Amino acid sequence: MLRSSLIALTILSSACSFSGRGSRGTVPVQPDLPPLPEFVEVCVSKAVVLPAKVNGKSWDGVGRVDRRARKLIPDLISASQGGGYAAALSAAGSVGTKVFNKVKGPPDLRVQMQLGREYIVRTDHVKDTAIAPFGASEANCAVIAKDEYSERVQFVVEDMDVGKPEIVGTTAFVGIPVEAIRSGSWQVNGFDAVVEIQLTLQPMEKPKDRRPLNEETAPPSVDDHAE
Image 1 (cartoon, rainbow, N blue to C red):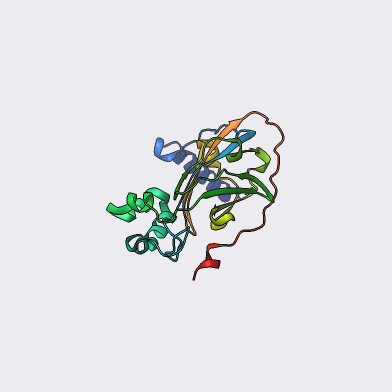
Image 2 (tube, helix red, strand yellow):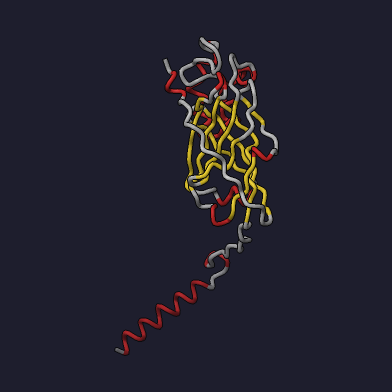
């Protein structure tokens, strides 16, 4: 029994001695982060889509986009999934800006954001462009409470041409990233024919009650018109 006690004391003494050996023997202390805001206003600020549908057809009208743009589409899709519009431009090389700025039959873009079962953002639509900037209007923004930060979030990007919307791409997340709430910006990288969505997040004091949006009839996907 005495021998066991001596062994235990020796081990404890060694452990205490090791923990005090300078900075290499200590565990760094993480600073306490401030609490997340009780409310944030989320605004969709920009959306970028491919210069053509995945199958090479133009967004509006008939026919296909020019051969250079069609050949680039697989590379644009792959690059945008990792880094959004900046990565897609890099993959497109010297013709990148021209490919996005001179789109044949450009789409009229709109973004919807769903939180849980509720649609909370249905942006204005920006006509005739693959690169759509959205202003800070009421339609482009919604306020989210702290207890909703972990809800499922879904984005639907649509082309509003030909009198009815057509899905360009859709993606979903379980919760809003904490880093996005703290930094005030959220970039959602490539999915389907979408290259990038940019959002801003602004802390707010308690807002007025949010008015839910009506759910619209689901538009056809781009695959419905593949061939």
